[in-house]
Image 1 (cartoon, rainbow, N blue to C red):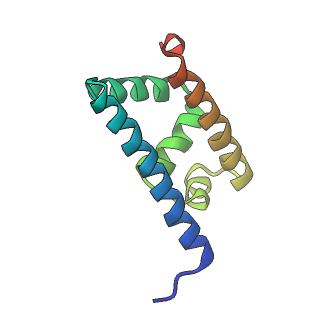
Image 2 (tube, rainbow, N blue to C red):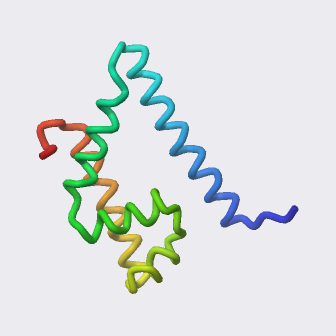
Length: 103
């Protein structure tokens, strides 16, 4: 089985994301918190994103399209999709670190 470097990086990146999610949930369970809170907070943070950024996130992480696939689906340049992902990640981090920032 031949796997190119880009595919391998994508798999490693997904594993890192999953590990971060597992670590976060583990901490919540250890702290006795209800994990439904995380889902509610994350959903609220996603809803707080600009619509164009939210669309990119949903296509990339829910529909699991590649960046090129997201760009094609939205009719946007790849650079625009990458910028929206970058700014969206920053915004989500801000919102999730400060519950008061959530609507």
